[in-house]
Image (cartoon, rainbow, N blue to C red; front, side, top):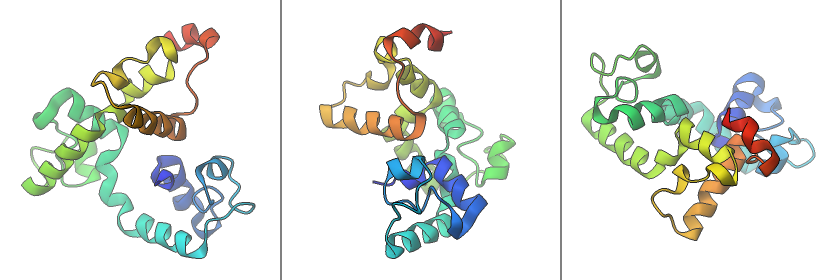
Length: 170
């Protein structure tokens, strides 16, 4: 599982490098607790992650929530997710500075498979059982539901308990 690619772990690597206590952990639980010193990933695994952060990390900027949302709301006309790089995307410059067509097709395919990571869908999941409909509107298999639930928990925390749902609905 690639839990260490989530923004909080990327940020830890960017801020702390080799001394990071989250990204270098042996599992996502230890990573969330910042306990890489107690439960570290193997040196080989840390090297693999470090290489990804240095090389591929910023090449996948378009997978971040704001770009997923641009795709969800605007489809092929999105001005952010279609841009060639992050600065142009943040300016809404996908029309003036588009990514190559093949790249656009690959991103579009990823969004079609990962639409459930869009912020408003994550928010629906976080409401707990009363709000858990949007993220499974496509009737995913039990395995797919578990994959999504695990991703939400790793990236968004725990869903609301019934007594908390009203607070999160506001």
